[in-house]
Image (cartoon, rainbow, N blue to C red; front, top):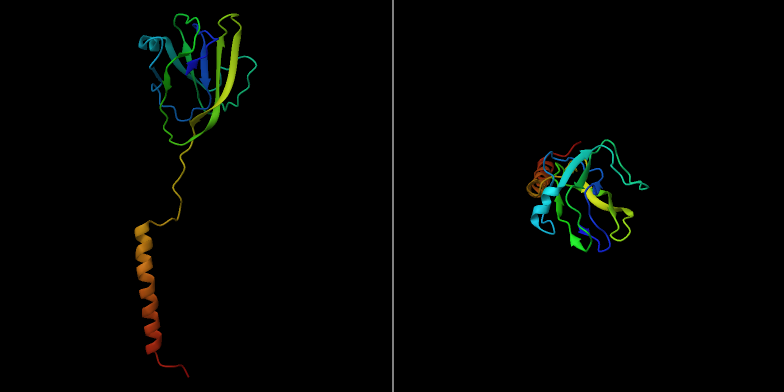
Length: 165
C-alpha cells in the first residue's frame, strides 16, 4: 500500500477490506513498512461483521462475512509518496472474488479527510467442488481398450448361434 504524495498518515487512520471469507484468527500481519521496518508495530488488525466504513461511502458489505480493518496508531507521517507496507491475512479458502476496500487519510496541506473506495480481491466463501462424474484418464483408457473387446465377443457369440426359425 502506498501513501499518496499529497496525503499524511496519522494515528487513527484505517482501511477496511470487506467480506474476507475464511479468515484464520491471528494471521493478520504487516511487513516491509516505511519509513523503516519498526513501523509495523504501529498497525493493528481487527475483524468485524460490518464496517467500519468512512463517512459517505457505501460499499457492499455482507454481515455474514467478516471484514478486516488495519488501523495505524503511530506517529504522524507528514506527507510524501511512501510505501506503507505489505498487509496480509490467511484464509481457509483458496478461490477469490471481487469485494471492496475503503480508506481514510487527511490531506497533507489542508488536513481535510479524504475517504476513498476501490475494488479488491478477497477469498470467496466457498470451495469450488470437483466436477462430479468426470472419470480419471486411466479409467477412460481402460474403457477405450475394453469396449471394443466386449463388442467383438458379442459379435462372435451371435455369429456362432443357430438361426431362429
